[in-house]
Length: 345
Image (tube, rainbow, N blue to C red; front, top):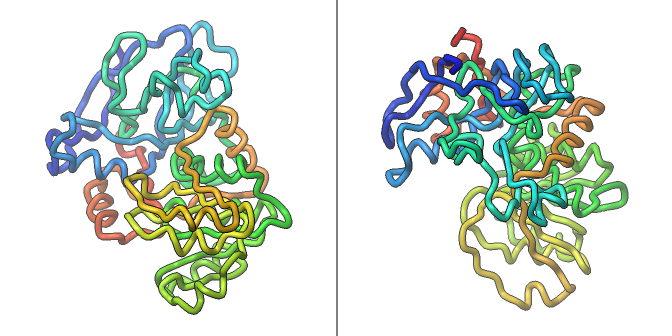
């Protein structure tokens, strides 16, 4: 076994504590990654505060680092390679979704980076708020070294969540794209859509965020709480990606779609109600997406390296993880916290 250091929540709503634990010895298709930076996702916060969750739990599912060892069958990576890992670390590899390159939709459910079930020994996966992570090579990605590694980490969750639908719906030059909400997901959707050549409009509930939207390279911004402003957007957009993380009315965004337009919801994944007529008039589509398959994930990283795209982050030592959680819960972040894991070594 390999000894690692990390942070865990011993119970719901408890403070995270530093501890020592064992990682598995490398299998033939494994690599060991020295974790240098790990993003702090809302999922991490929710997991550690869920009274019905399984504890103790070590969060962390969007991270970057350097390979320190490889298994005997690994051919695509070598010691010293700069890599990134996301929220999926294995899948069945045989179902229709996996063979289509959509391991994120694996029929047997993909193995998650933490709190998942290892497909070999049935152990529970331990997250990347730690000094090291051991992972199957198929779910490790080459990381562009031309951009800040800390700012790459959130691409592995927030980034791929918006990248895959943008690519699926062929967002590019000549398309009018709306982005609803400019938090952790939305700010990357704006950057991606702009770099892909689309005309990008941000929908925000706050007039104070109009300047932020423009700084992110949006072409314009609309205050969604202004009925007149929303009415002026009727039938304008080919594609709207909804990154709002709480329950809300979809009707105003469906009304902004042009003929055969699509509204893709990636922020709030709970129950939603819609009027069929909002879809019927204009032959509109309502869709969703989550995470991403291996092909799209590497494609996203390559694109980010070519275009210099990264998340807007605030980096803090891993020892301040509790502060990050408290500020995240208060909404005090623009747009993602990233933990520097260097203080664990």
